[in-house]
Image (cartoon, rainbow, N blue to C red):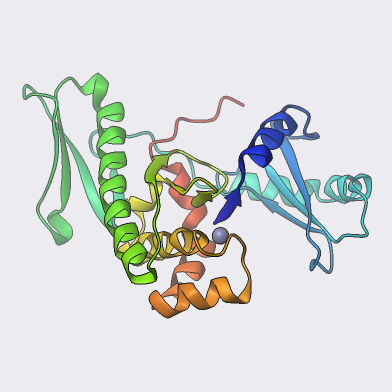
Length: 256
Ligand SMILES: [Zn+2]
């Protein structure tokens, strides 16, 4: 959802080490602050994976004031951390969402280490063969491949429709955003989009492809996305409501 130029990326990596940190009930939370010209007030959010804070400041509010505001919100932060769903490491018997539908993870012992999907509806399952010790990694790799295939197809569709060209599609476990578009034309996405309903993944593809033409979120950008993608608002609403929960799947319990 964001455009990152190489310089900005480097600057961000550098800044990550020197971020202010707040400790709440044993959790160490870095505070990512940014100034937003149109923000009317200070806005504090937990990152989707609930391991960091996002602080949005109106242009005339200094960061020190923002951090004082964070201090006043300790109870709220503690409550948010308590209410977060628990991480669910991949294991036999776990039900995970795949393309928005529940799928049972089934370990198939004794077979070669492959992964496949079978059944549908209530009987839908993802089977993982091979040594059970490698199930989490095998399933993660398989989900990433599925995500990349689906995203590549969707990006090709939108690139053709918008008459644009991208250089490649990569999937990663990016925590802070669902997708990004580099000035070199690389479209990056979170593999976790394969867990969401297909219209969400489809929208993210349209969104990042449109950044190839408009490296901003201007009215022209949105017009381009909306012209080609029929479910922008539904997808944005879905991500706002459920996006954070996608981060619990396959995640290890936090060490703090
Ligand atoms: Zn964007």
